Length: 59
Image (cartoon, rainbow, N blue to C red; front, top):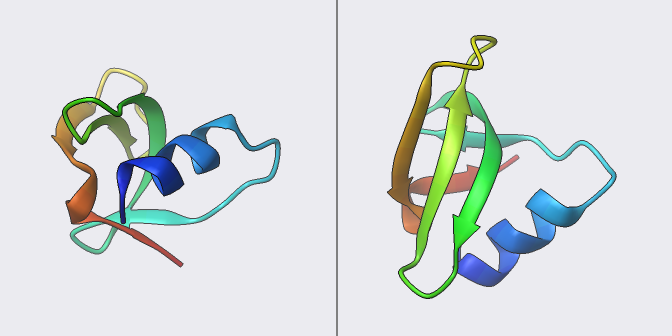
């Protein structure tokens, strides 16, 4: 995925399935300048990771 698409998903009112290494995640923030995204892994709001948007896939 690229930063632009990650930002579009983050801003969308629709629910769009995104995965990180096969695990479902929610995009919490996108840092377009650095190509990074903060994602919530699973159902725990405190379980977040900051990763390259290139690691995210849309399903």
